[in-house]
Amino acid sequence: MEDAAIEGIRESPETTDLVKASIFFGTYFPSIKTIFGLLIMTLAIINLRISPPDKTDALRLLKSKFKKNKIGHAGTLDPMATGILPVALGEATKTVPYIHEKNKTYLFTIKFGDQTDTDDATGKIIKRSNKKPDINEIKSVLSNYIGPIKQIPPVYSAKKFKGVRSYKLARNGIVPDMVKKEKIVKIEDIKLIKMDSDLECTIEVTCGTGTYIRSISKHIGDKLDLCCHVTKIERTKYGPFNLKNILSIDRLMQLNHDIDTLDMIICPIETVLDDILAVQVNSFDANRLKNGSTITFRGKNKDPQSGRVIVKSADKLIAICSLQEMQLQPVRVFNL
Image 1: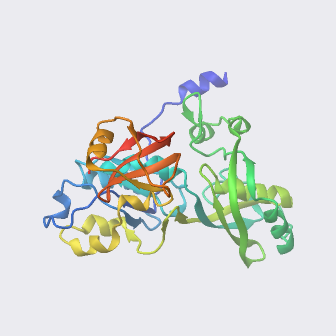
Image 2 (image 1 turned 90 degrees about the horizontal axis):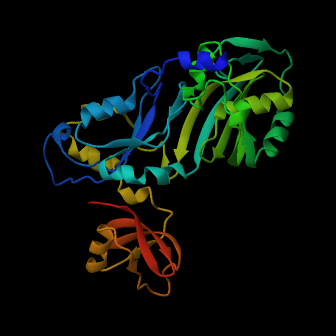
Image 3 (image 1 turned 45 degrees about the horizontal axis):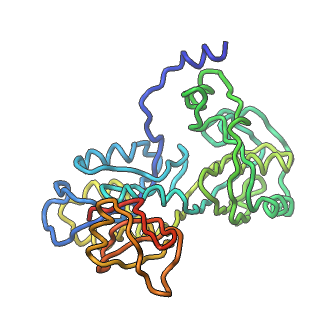
């Protein structure tokens, strides 16, 4: 019966419910002085924000602005979340998988007393508790929540069951067994920032990819035997990117002639790859790598002997390569 019900729920085109901030990265040529909206180029890193309660799909807006550029992003935000979302254009889309590997930092606010079906403020209240949280008990729970953690995603999430998003199933009265989607996530650090009131607290967490903040909140409530839900989530850091020099997407849409503003807010592709060791090759070997050939690496003693490296020639980014037994094999080649 459930399978038949799932089949009956038709998939509609997916959109990002709410994207509050983004980052562009790629290659930008400031010598080209023309109308920004008409440039056929690949942008470098730009820190963007969309302020709530704007529900606009950022990627759709960007595609309308840069029609001839390939666009990719490194993970969406929860519908009510704000913060950083890296968005790449053109050649920079080749670095998106490496963004996914980086840690993220969030500030989030938990309100105790009410549990909702979505685990955030957008849902319906399904349970209540009267007990007030104790600050020392909260700290104790957090102190034991560092390292590899088993996490069950929220029912209202983008996880798929038989090809259908779990939140679509939930909206149609089918509650999927989210235990089947349990996975190990990594919590690098988590701490109580402040008690906002007797029933609210703000927490900061630094975590790896795939972590659900709403699941962290629910875990804290379960350990304290309290009902709770998230009322605010802000992603404040994503790898090398933070909230400094952030630019609203509305402002980006208005940038046509303001090349100087772009110069101030963009960064090179290498910003994404800042934690990968770089090696230099000559122009002959660079061309071979660009053609997909594996080459023998004639490095110096201080150069890495194995692992992932970025390869440059005359300080120009050529490729991301795998280095094994002094052989450089191209994994991602950049046409810059």
